[in-house]
Length: 305
Image 1 (cartoon, rainbow, N blue to C red):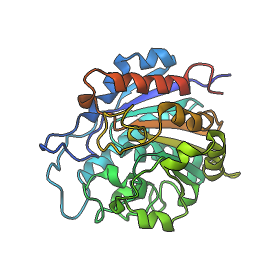
Image 2 (cartoon, rainbow, N blue to C red):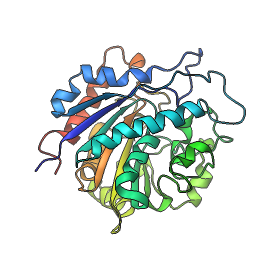
Image 3 (cartoon, rainbow, N blue to C red):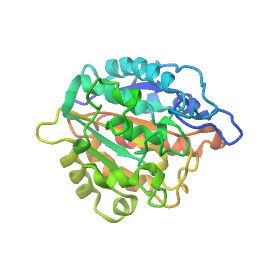
Image 4 (tube, rainbow, N blue to C red):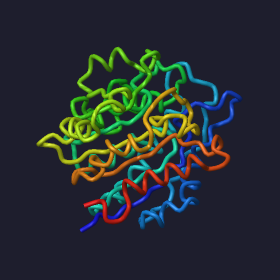
């Protein structure tokens, strides 16, 4: 029997730096815009509504912590409750953000099903493996993978208590093309057990092979489930310009589908979160159309089993 898709909106911008003029970014509008493009009907999905975040506080970067740390922690716990409901009965969870910090909530919810045997696929143009000291933006989004794997020993890294949300050895980072940006924690990433599949490899190698390589890491024999996090900036800016930090190059939607499709259709895939699409940078909604087309190709009725 095909699995139903349950959609949760995470209209959060509290985990990302403001625009250069100091105004909070409009990634919080993404769930509404993607719904307006027919996302729910095209997926025949169950819509569980939005979880509203706290207000943005730290327009000026704090000296000793990430921006909006308390707000991100509170929001992660609230959002995790809704995501738990989305995946509680075998449904596939689709969480539409919002900024990358929402992955913390998704993992917190997924741990209720998979425990310490949880895996993570993190598709992003950047490693997001910085500590609060290393990050140039001070945003949780630039540290999301570090916080998820417990590298940065902050309250945001301890949402699951003493344990990290997910272990390095069950984590795969795909699509990175930030080799010139050491402040994303690249030295620590190289020393970790995270599977690192950079963008050039994603474009060069066979998609089925890369999917199998990724699954070997995140869905190990004792694994009980894995989550997929997709930052829209993993795509080439020629196809997806409406993101916070576009990087030259990157995969096409078709190339991304080749790798993601076997992952999404794996029986232990619990859900997928999509982040950093900014409607304010997409006046003709062409990027929104591409994202909805991508999600339909991945999650259309009859494809999830």
